[in-house]
Amino acid sequence: MTRLAPGLSSLVVVAVAALAGCSGAQLPKGGPQTADAVLAKALARPLPRSVQGMSRLDAYVDGKARKADVLVRAERPGKVQFQALTPTLDLVAVLSTDGRRFVSFERGARRCYVGDACPRNLARLVPIAMPAKDLVAAVLGRPPLIDARSSALTWDSARGAYKVERRSADGAWRQELWITPKTYRFRASVVHHKGKRVASIAYGELDALGPTAPPKVMRLQLPEKKIDMSLTLRDVTLGEDVEDEAFALPCPSGTLAVELPCTASPGVGR
Image 1 (tube, rainbow, N blue to C red):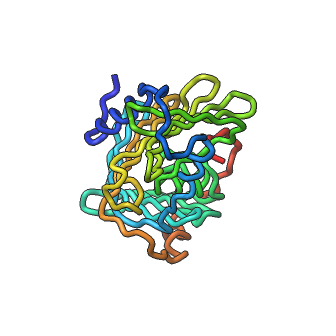
Image 2: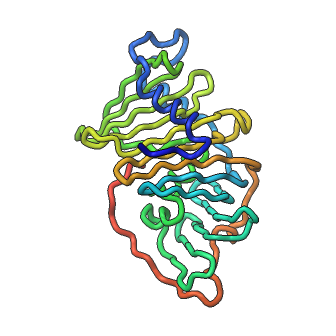
Image 3: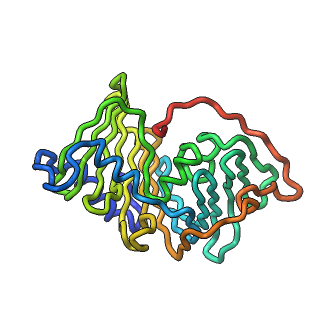
């Protein structure tokens, strides 16, 4: 059994309870009564324009634990940067994109990787293969959505949350979303493909950083890739403009710039 890093256990309880919760209870009176209405309220909830601050990354990839302090900069719609740092705040690795191009390098490495900001390239440092706009939105508390033709709404009484279930036109993709009443924050998202759970995002401590702030904790699981990671925000600043140059980083002097191609791969975002 995989051991989880400290700080992940509370989110595990949230995710497991959400998946096991009773979904047959009556919908709250006076609230939205359809899946589209609940989802529209959640998507209409404003996100901060930007977030900057320190975070803690705890990850298990193929059974190996990885921990790092990470400086996060994200600005909608698609600018994001992660800087992995040592406990003494020395730079270890960087991934940055202005939404169009990306750059990634490690301290002391001879090569610096550049290319288009496709999901494959953006997953080099933090293993979240999403388009830049979806990655930024996910960090801010809005998970990516599958393209769906049908949806259904139930009430999960165990979690005290709306449960929205969405299905793709061909039936191969299914997504479950848990959304809090009144505040309409996303609490969790689970995506299935052909009956198998392929990705889940759970959010914890939704209001710890403030009512308009992103959730303090985001946990991502990709079972088929054996990835289980948690990003915990701390000491964040919201809404400030970030200079474009902060995201369009050059390769370090003396490194060889290597252009990485983008290959088509199925994703869960739209």
